[in-house]
Image 1 (cartoon, rainbow, N blue to C red):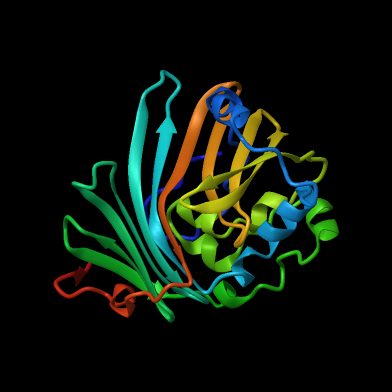
Image 2: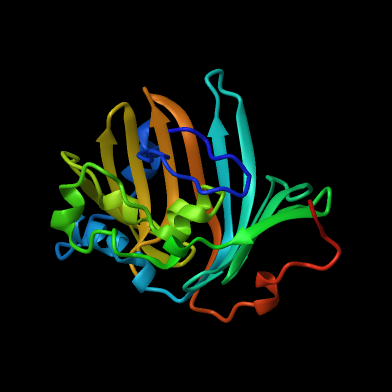
Amino acid sequence: MTKKNWIFSITIGIVFGVIGGLLGIPHLLQAKPVSAASTADDVLNTTLNSSLKWNTVQGTAVIVWYGENDEKQEYLNTFAIQQPNLANISVKNADGSVAASEWISDGSKAYNIDPQAKTYAGGTLPAFSKDFSLLPTTLEAAKNTDAIYRHPFGMLIPSPVGEYLYPQWLAQGKGITYNLVGEDTILNRKVWIITYIKYNAEVTAWIDEETGIIVKYIQSMDGRPFEEMTFTQLEVNSPVDRTLFILPSGVISQ
């Protein structure tokens, strides 16, 4: 999987797959046993229909990328989304001191803003951003596809946080064995813990039981840490400040 560029573009072709490995083992040992009523298919079905289970989400997430020599880059993502296509995604350094980028969708246009230069580039949202016809609607269809169909609007978000807020991709792909290994509570919300292996990636995901949103994600590649994501704040179906979806004053077109 390649890291997403922080530019206004349609980001296709990211292969996700991983949370767990050595980083996840200590936490998993403390996880509560899974309810007998829950199965891995319950989890996958919830992620597959995640965008139907919430109207607004807002919060923060910390994303860490690991290099081959254990170096790391850490970013703070702040997000606010209102269905079907209003969004504000801000990416900053981990301490929040320097804003790297901001992406806004006002429902008809999207803008990629450079906060340092106070400039933006924008364009009309593509028609496919509202076309959900390719998304599989059943687990049988999801597990028998060679292609991975991501949520059309989530795919436009130029930050990995879009993949966790729109996790329809998780349930898709042939020959993957998913293991539901426990339950936990994150940010006062009940979550399932699911693991799987795909190619050279080991995956563990902490999935919100109400919405299917992935609230924690750890990925290792070939046994080495690759990515870790943790939601530090999450509000679901709370009113969102509509001014977040408007191009701010003081920025000029590139």
